[in-house]
Image 1 (cartoon, rainbow, N blue to C red):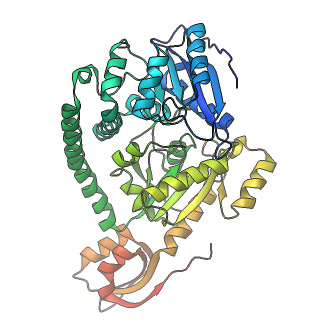
Image 2 (cartoon, rainbow, N blue to C red):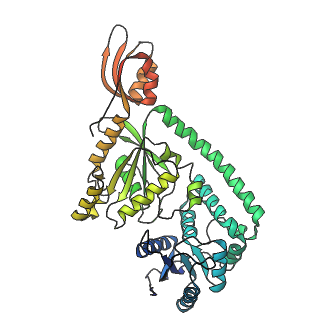
Length: 437
């Protein structure tokens, strides 16, 4: 039930700067309203808005007309007038009719919900062609049932700022028919782009290289972890959803074996379903990975809630059954008692700091053990005229021993199931490797 003004020294240097009021319903379950509002404030900051007030209301269920009750809505309108707010952001998704009714009660102020804000941030950060297409598709699907009210709403605030990025000014005159046409165009373009990604993915599958995907809550340190493990140069920033595009790099394991590591888009509490749908081709990297490294900000007070949020999205995209290794990142910012609490709940997790390097060798060893767990050890005798298979073994498998005989080259190799399939016709015996890790 708070109403307090906040200012920032950067307020006069950003153009445009929206002065935002945050509104949340306290339902007494799930994420605490204080924690959820704190995250919403970070989202607003990432989008370029300055939060000047927060308002909450205890609700057993949202009002079907205006989400909050009449008295609270009047308080929101008065607060907006008093503080010169240009934007009101609700922490839950509003129905089109709720948004339209709120706009009528809080005139000359943009109304957004958590979903719209996240979509706006994605539009701000999308850089690749695929990323831009995915974000625009998610925005159009979200906006379609809101066209009448939102286009009028945006027309009054065409100067820029939060809620004005994305499809662009030309969309202000579109109708539902044109919006549906654009959605169809975006889906067709994404099918083409996804086809190119699928070819790359299938090439990695055929290669037999063990595939690792980094997953985790936004800002948990996935990109920093990728950089630390692979000497990549992926963009890193202390912002939510700083990077959206999947990035794949190679990593050499302690025994000399090479694996691929893919950084994927971060997840978040109340992740918009339209984004999950739009990014499904990108998230194929997660669904089909041999191992997921679930990066968790171990220093965050809501670490366990964030783990649950990520697991929920993994279930939604069909990746809940993937082998996973929990990694508590940011060890340099953890208190000893916090570390103990994390390991008490997840005793097999790795604690590390991608920033300082602490625990990264342990992480590499655990990845190596998981790769070995899913590998086969073969003793093969390759005729001297099958130099192609010798090359394949050296390129895609781990060579344990080599011996030249009268019949050919005898190799003992450890290989993935895919590579082993090419070598098995020449196998003398085979056994599955089981790791003690």
